[in-house]
Amino acid sequence: MSLIPHVIVIGAGSTGSATAHDLALRGLRVTVLERGEIASGTTGRNHCLLHSGGRYCVNDKEGAIECIRENLILRRIMPHALELNDGLFVAVSDEDLAFKETFLAGCAECHIPAREIPVRQALEIEPFVNPDIRAAVQVPDGVFEPWRFCASFLATAIKNGAAVRNFTEVKDFIFQGHTVTGVTVLDHRTGETETLGADMVVNATGAWAGIIAAMAEVDVPVVPTAGVMVTIGERFNNMVINRMHLPHDGDIVVPIRNTSIIGTTSWRVTSPDAIEIPREQIDSMRQAGELLMPILKAGRQRGIMAVARPLISKANADARAFSRTFEAYNHRSQGAAGLVTISGGKTTTARGMAEKVSDIVCGELGIDAPCKTRTTPLVSYREFYN
Amino acid sequence: MSITLTLRILRSRRDVMPHYETFEVSVSDAANVLDAIEQVWAHRDRKLMFRHACHHASCGTCAVRINGREKLPCIVPVADYSGKPLTIEPLRNFDIVGDLVVDMAKFFQNQQASDFVITRPTENELVGKPIAYTGGMDPESASTIPFNRFENCVECGICLSACPTMAGDHKFFGPAGLAAIKRQLDKTTDPVERKRLLELADGEHGVWRCHSAWECTEACPQQVFPAESIMALRKEITKKHFRELFGK
Image 1 (cartoon, chains in turn yellow, blue):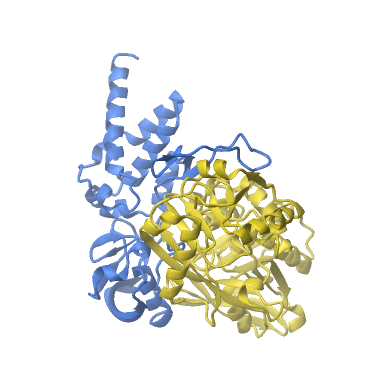
Image 2: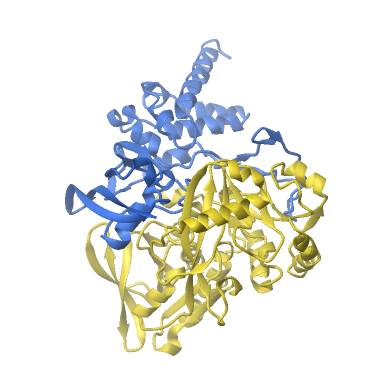
């Protein structure tokens, strides 16, 4: 019997991966359980946008401040999994132009470095942006590769003693009284069911958090909200091109490698698994993307993806109005001590989410171990397989 | 509009002998083959093992064989097959973990052997148009870190599966690993590092093992051109041997 507490992390998306890394660095025994491939949920199918926070700096300042803080940390700890080419917010209409001062004030308030550049110069940097733009502001957006993002955190966690079991699905929680003491899992590799004991369990399953929590008969207010993205098989922009207005469908073109990804729509779904892709959404989003970059009309469609984001329900608002911030829930008060859920947020803020939930885990275990992930460089994602 | 598709999937597990299993699924006519595989998992058999993450040919995880050809199913429209049945099999020349999942451990060790960095400095043009950069916005490194790109290679393993040499020699370093060595060689002028990289590519399981079938370049979904890299490495290594012969 080891005296070091054992923590099970359910989910190997960005949140679970970063949480495993954080807890392993604090000296805990960690086992990650993931029902499929790592990053095969929301993280994989996200927009790959390393947010500067510019997108949220007017209507969701809390989310924006989290984004810029984490953006700057990730640049230091995982430079090998990032494309860093900045972002450009462009005003396409009179209304966008009128929004410019509000946007710049929002950036300043959230401490997002922002620099207005003359339109002529912006078009020299980005020759395929709509030539009729009225204003352009450069911010430190970036791009990450989602699978390598998770693999980098997990590889580092493994180096620090964590075990990662993908294709291992949690089927039920084990209780002693009102305390979660482990889980029952099905290992898809062997077809065998087994039980694993734990001192704490972290539910880091994002849009699936409600489904996992329900197994322990507790609630989390996560609303799976789908989005579609379309990948064009050619790269037409160096920076991330954003429309300078409140977030809306089809108002961002994220370049990655030799492609451009147009995103994104937003609608509520009942189940986050295998979302059907509505063709009309693809068409309307492509049209909106073409307003930012007319050349996209000629681009060959390479891929389409749809996935559910985990939005935290705080009020009866429409999907876009939800904050993109994150929440941790300690289920002790609901009769499930030993179980904590972390959800909401974005891949950009995964490290911060991990810090928050790991603080709760250590508090519950009575362990005084500070978070070290802000300054600890991650090892190569390839070491995930070592 | 949705269409009905028949997928014949090669199933296997540690305790299950390999066999084909046929599934019918309904998918949107806008869907890709990966969406159809995911529908099988979601609505027919939750035990199906397959790898996937980004769904836009960036992560390289989903590679399989569709009707005998190596593909990234995330960028292959179901419409390409006009409703004909699809046979989905795991990559060849890898150990099978289960169903469509192969063991990538050795592949990634070879990718890492050359310290192949997955990013590279960017070009000065976009689709033939020159671009003029301003300084970056990262407050700590505004002028020190140039803008960059991810390398074309997504490390999917398709080239190893398509490679006939790989089928005959499991110790062969493989097209992706050799292409990675070539890219890393292009990025360095350090003579010690260049020597190390050329030695890594040399030898009976290195570039000389390749039978020049060119299947890797043919199958690569990302324009990495591994066969061309192997030929270029052969030239560099031959030059190195000649120089050594004359004591230079």
